[in-house]
Length: 384
Ligand code: SF4
Image (cartoon, rainbow, N blue to C red; front, side, top):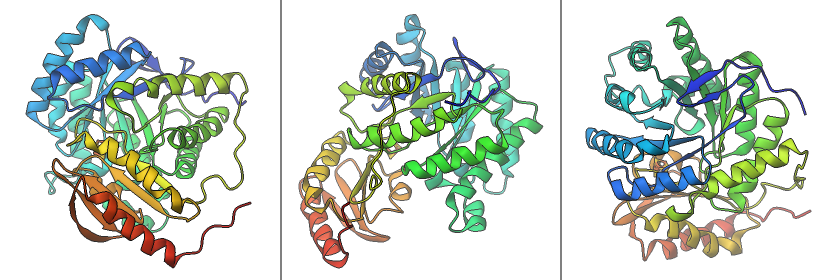
């Protein structure tokens, strides 16, 4: 096992990320932030499971109000809270006094105030973080990378993701803001490996947050994440981790226990061997849910899709099931069959073609029809 990269140490509440600090374990509340009771329960559960840092998604002023109440209710637990900002980056001035860290996605900064330069928006974010003495995460996702870089890099989507992270790290460096970490995520663990390796080879000084996003349900979601973490951590890459799993809300603590198990195994040299055909055949990706989820039936639907599609396991196809209309459309772009869930129904597409909007009770049979057509068109993969 290679010695860990000596990254900069970033204080986040009562923990430190990077340097020689232990690898921090994170998780995220899956409940609607404005459902205060459910979110407080969720934070308690994740905290009790041993998380070092917990993230909450904030999209509106109403979410910020809820966050203030949630913070009061959990003050005695000394939880380190992080907030996930979406397009409305200016919300950082409302949330920064309430949390220890904020994550922004560079790919979302072009949505608002299109005439304004991205570096100006980053300056606003960095100044607010500095004034409130909180940390930042530049959280790049391969699926939602800055459109200009996407065009520039074409098929090399990992290259675009790495360039975006490097560009934003440089923005923060130029502003003299060094309390930040970076993440480069995708639902494909191989892209996670590639992106983090490329970034760490250029900026070994910056702490990295590792994760395979939308990894799906256990056990497949755990295996994909484990493979990525085993490789990267044993190469000295990674300062904080999140295992992202689609789970019922009451079982969310599993993200933390699984993360600790993986770390423990890596430290003790217990690596799982990976068969050479791992990753072939049917791939189901599903998001871990967050405050934007619009109907809890989404989790049940993801489980039903897994059972229903078992007969297609030898076909190289990807089915994506996402919990909301905010990120769902973009995050299903690369899938052969994509679903994203709304309050009353589910949008279904085949490749890039929107098939329709179906009720939770009918979408499964519609999906099966498409799957039947697709497996008739492609040969199954050869099993070793
Ligand atoms: S797809 Fe939507 S609900 Fe699922 S994690 Fe992403 S933002 Fe949250």
